[in-house]
Length: 377
Image: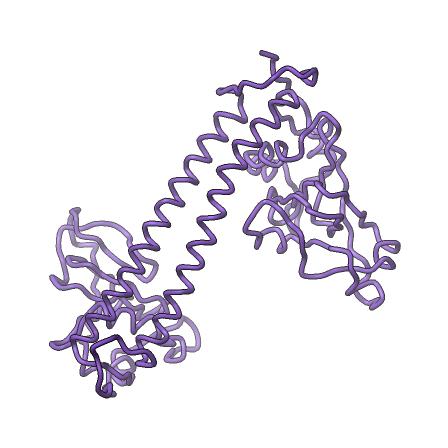
């Protein structure tokens, strides 16, 4: 097989910087030409970019240093979010936070898109600047990539594109399932939609009637063990003792007060996290889903670090159905959560597979069989 060669990015593509038309001249803006900023790249859900938040006019293009880049250009962020990239799906311009790669004849843009992804840390290391880090055109030009012949570039890109398509499809499915669950929560947890077999009015109660607010404690005196310790940011470590033998709901006393957590017994919580347990006649998982619908930030008592008090929590009023309906609603939402969690696990698995494939394919550790069509030079 043909040996791979070390080539600089400058040997693989023409590097073209972007620019910004004057923002004080209205006729330069709101035109039909895509003008990409780094935020347009970071919010992308796929490797392809076909739109931007802002657009410029022909006047803006003619009166600035930005350049109309051809379809297929790799839009590479080289300032602030260094190393993030997308492939332009139509003629595009960018601001000065980019060094854009227009591939030469012997470089396949889809392969180069993948090949530069492992170089993010190297780009950041070689960036400079006092206000914000930026990698210069000259430095970028000299970064080397182990480069296969063109047919092998196509083969590698095809394999990685296939796994990317699976990842993108899963992300879309997860987003759809989350939206469906959110809609179900808004209807089922307010009584707007009732499950078959249930009727009767929901009763308004203060939270102190349906749950008990318990305080977390310091854990530093505890030995190591299998009991999880939770803080406002989630799971922290494991200790040898438990605060509760019944499932509960974690809600921040200080700091992150708007992200309820379901706590599976046994567990320990730190002193900045309340744990709420259900009183008799109330389903703890139903209370957990209900807690997700409460605007906790509106009950913040502090001007600095957000905080909640036991008194404030106890006084919040919500409407509740009978226990049987609570349980039925909680089971439906739990099933939705299980499906989403299963899809998330599958997504993480595919991401790991992709990382492994990139590590093997982009370094030549694994070679793909390709036909010799005269392009192996």
